[in-house]
Image 1 (cartoon, one colour):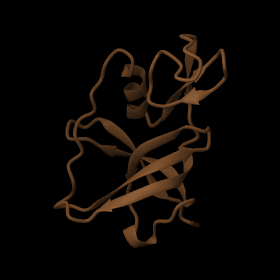
Image 2: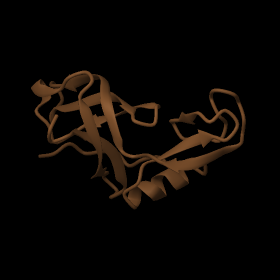
Image 3: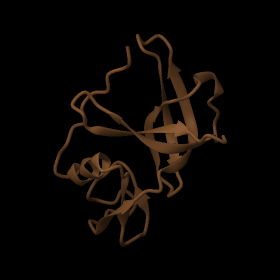
Image 4: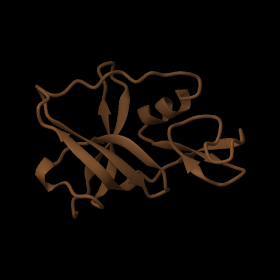
Length: 130
């Protein structure tokens, strides 16, 4: 039995993010004023408070900043902070891995896992060479 992923909550600010995820892309917001990419998707830049933001496609590559394994869950899973190549750090799950082999600084790549409603949820897996 695999772990059920709750359906994501869509709203007008995040609709483009979830639409892109369903097409296999991870979007980040980038501020046109201060040039900083940021995550979680929102209209206002958290660095300079500008509302001049745009969507940019992430490479889907990153490194594990920190992680924890939920071993007591009925279906154990790993949750992690992943620092993307573009700069922002996001919270996600690490999948398709040996939990005991996870390491800080380990390179990961984007994968999409279906939620209960079929929506694509971005998660990460260790790179094959890592």
